[in-house]
Amino acid sequence: MILFIVNCVKFLIFTVICKGSIMQKKTILMLLCFFSFAGCTNFDQIKTSSPLIQENRLEVLNGKYRLAPPDVIEIQVQDNPDIGTRTTISPDGNIFLPLLGDIYVEGLTLLEVRGKVHNLLGRFLKDLPEESVSVQVLTYNSKKVYVYSYGGGSVKAVPFTGDLRILDVIAQAAVLARTDNFKKIKVVRGTNDPDKNPQRLVLNLNDIVRKGNTEKNIVLMPNDVVYIPPTILGFVGYKLKDLLFPVQPVTQIGQTYGYAQTGGLGFNPQRGASFGGGSSFGNIGQ
Image (tube, rainbow, N blue to C red; front, side):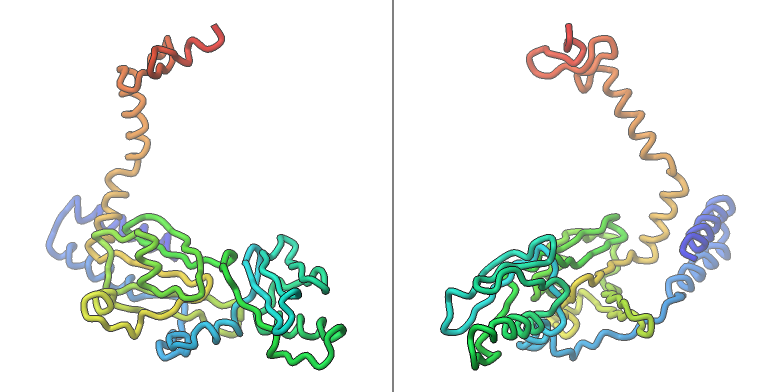
């Protein structure tokens, strides 16, 4: 579907270049607007009133975040400091806890780990209340949040910290381009449940930065994707560039090689590449 749309855009741009009538220019803009709003995926709205944007957001996250290597966690047992530990989950999904040995924790939430540790300790410590066992994540190493800027042309992975907001991710990724549409930034949250739709939130970055409206500056979840689309004119410009300069990278390689042949990089086809004090690859082995 996406390939079909791209090919249609290229064809229309080519037509405008060849004929350049006002009617064709209007047609291409109308079709671009249509394809911008057309889609084949149904999304549910991400609720900005979620408890995750309140002060107890990390407590709520504890019931959803599933541990995986190489997360770093800390386990403490009240009145029993020798049993506690601060450790990195090993590649096989285990941690080592004094008195209990190896415990498999991969795929468990913090609350589930607390319950598992409490049950195992019950064999040695009678009448131990479950509340005396605490588990927390010190470093979220296994999860990422992704930022894709169409104008920047790259996807950046930002380590998930448990308290990562949209503005934090955009600032850390540093992928913004002048042709980005700051008014239509999208947060996409996927799902593994075939009976549920993925979720999406559309926000205006200017409202957050310039107006101080932080309602949609939500706390992100692991594997969320922040997509920064281009403006309509920016999109047309990128497709026009692809149409007119499809071999530009190859041309740049040829230019670099030609520059090297003239000695600009210290390269001589007969002598090899020379660096500094006159040594060259061509002299190696002589």
